[in-house]
Picture: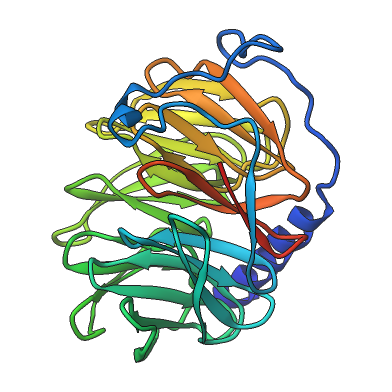
Length: 328
């Protein structure tokens, strides 16, 4: 079985298991006790200037295309990759108004923003599509020769994990700048300002790749089936789908600083809001305090959740079974 075929099999398995996760996760503490029932939501002092330092008790919900698996924020709008119908939806972040729906490739699953354009990974076509963020015009579609998943931008290049490695594409014109073998079914990437970190879903590791030349600086063991990944300014956070945990690694050297229970399985996407780490996956969102990994909140959703993004004030998540985005 080729890496491409294996990658497509894993992708299909992930999508099916996400849709199957309809039960609620157990409310089990990680390291440190979760927020007590009935207590007010934890504050985020970084949002005081936005008059939104709290977590609202209700969730706004906005319909998009079929099976929203990837989300990205462009500074003003939220973009959703709709796996089931080959489209991308653009919504105004302030009020959720749909500003456009744009046709891309087959089975789009990941999105990233390069400062001017939205990049979409089309998992079935083995391509990435570049859309102008201002109006959704397709600026190019580029072959990546692998099953592309959740990408990242390093300030000049788009990094596309998939197959058995990661591809570096120049954002200005889509030229391939290099392909670097990692193994272990690379699935999602994050940039820490100097290096690209990649979750290897198949072997329970994370690889650290120097962005300038693709040199592999280290491979570090995390939990079972690592998927989503984010950078909090100092450390790397990984959501481990197979064992319902999150792993925190020091970005400078990859040392594991902690492994934290999410109170259930199904970790998928990970995002940082300036104070807290948010993790999607099961029919709920988990909120961890970044400073120590204490679980301070869990928010039930009506559907399994996948892609996740932060818009500076609110956390958005894709609800794959009901074709909508929730904003909280």
